[in-house]
Length: 417
Image 1 (cartoon, rainbow, N blue to C red):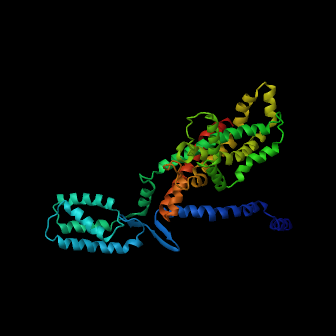
Image 2 (cartoon, helix red, strand yellow):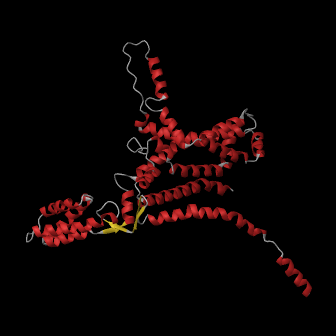
Image 3 (cartoon, rainbow, N blue to C red):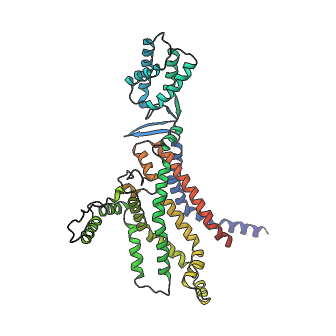
């Protein structure tokens, strides 16, 4: 018995646990994810609560609280806060013994304006007016009112609150940019998915026996390999007032009015001055860049369907349309949902095409400004706090919309299974 036990122990020691090697091979993925995705995501979330700048090589901040009536960082205006109370003290000396009146507020604003030009006067004057009305009702003296005004100047607010106010500024509406992004994504995605479905069915249909399939598959994927910057510059040159598209229209216009003495003068179409045309061009470029990739994904899904199912449908007398809607589409739903969600994520993160096509301004009148373009403006201004808030909002919107799409589209599929 002892010999058998020792033999078993010896065998156990030399046993190789192959199931643990899987963790070794997938470890690089998790390591890369933590370094390049998780840590930046958490850092972005943390700095959304702060005012944080980089001016050249100098780091300013992070500050959890900022001064309420100043634009910019705390450090830059520390000396200004020392000058302002002195100006108010001088003001009190001039009005010593006077009673508080409605004119005092304007006098204080004039005194402060001589000291500093960077204070947010609209906000400060509005709050100062409320303070003046309150102090008059309480019958306070000029000295007491000035002390309250000093306290207002040095008042601090949480940086997170200020970052939120910057992002959701009524004159710079984030909802408007989100709507712009969704509109341009839908305009590009609908033709993209329809044409990709059609091509995927054609290329995988053994009955059609299309020639030059490999050539066409390569050609439709090639636009995906072109850089968005080059693609955008190409479209900008083509549709500019002096570009080839307007040249073709001018020739057609001349042909239509040939032989007429009172022919009107041709006016080039200014595509980038029209909201509809600019959005349509952005959507067209996104469609051309991505429909080849979508086609290949859908082809893989169609080829994964058992051929015997299609043969059984033909034997039962099902036509091409019925087979497509009753067999191909339902069985293709998981791949379709994957394409829809990835396209939605890419659409929300739309940046390079409208950025280059409109020179980063979202012309005309910011109707092509996307959420990521606005995020880039915050980064360009070195203001990382509002940029962090914007990133978190994009992350939340992407997660919610992706979850809704998956839940609504896959519910019937899972129930059938």
